[in-house]
Image (cartoon, rainbow, N blue to C red):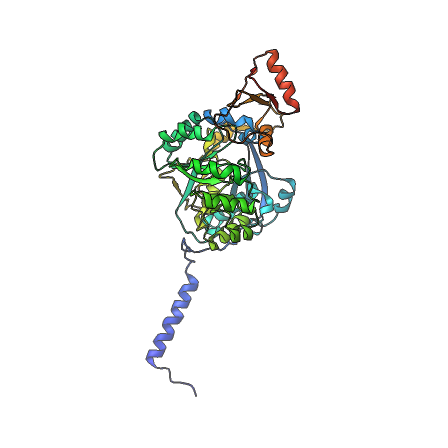
Length: 457
């Protein structure tokens, strides 16, 4: 039996119908900034062109004094940016080399369909995310997940150097709003002497993380040394003191020291690292898919980490968007943009109290500094022979060891061929002076380290 249509029912149905029509007619509301992921629109997101830009960006004065000992550090001044042009006219920007295979994979394809492919490399992946986010009028972090913070933690980075130069690095870092530094701890410098020089110049709130890159060799060498370093209040984290695969050794170090230990995520395998409690937190890097997966597991295990995605300002901003959605990215990130005379982006990277505001405008939220691009642009990344240099490790016994570069003397330290971290050790470059002694030592060093009981140079 059909029910009678009362005035009340008629009004109720009319109201619901009207609301439904209005909802269909009204434009879709901008999604809340905390919602994720953002929906991809229907504009033409086909990749029409991939443009490569090569740059030779000079180091600042202090980094320039020390980057050339290790070949890979010197090469950091050469950068490759890429621009991805979509069919809708939007241009996305990224940083990193673009291979022929990666270019072929995305050409003529929908950018949104490939932006999660880590195999493309950082340059293309960042550019695709930037382009898709701009197309949809949202910041990149809206494509990555739910925003959990509005400011990202960043840290200064400095290669191994005498304490007096670390002082200069920290002074500049503090002037730019940084509250932490990650320094390279190396067995050819007396780290305790470096700290005795550096720490008295620092404010108490400024923190130092030391990356040993396994150069303390084993728990026997490491345990007493790490405990001795605890006298310096500013030290906050030790990274990879001994090989990460040494599970029992790392468990012992955690029991010996009160300072947290960080490991690169994935070595040993993550479930081993978590079950055996070999470290207090992680160093996380890689492509978008890998970083978010690593961050999710770290969060489930309640382990903090820092993001380590290195490059110019483009990569730094990309890392900020990742930090926006990762709950446990609470240790200051390492990015390296501050080592160069330009960030290559506008506005520049500027911190307050160790953090920086995460952009909330479409795409990366920063633009390329086209004036800097024009100034430092080159035709291609050059292939150059290693510079012919000579370095001396000065031992407290009065002996000296001569090498051509840091890669070679680091290899001998890690292999256990040289004493690890003796008090009073230091390293210096021996300038080419045209003497017979310099030429002779340099020639002998072509076959490996030259170890002498005296210091002829």
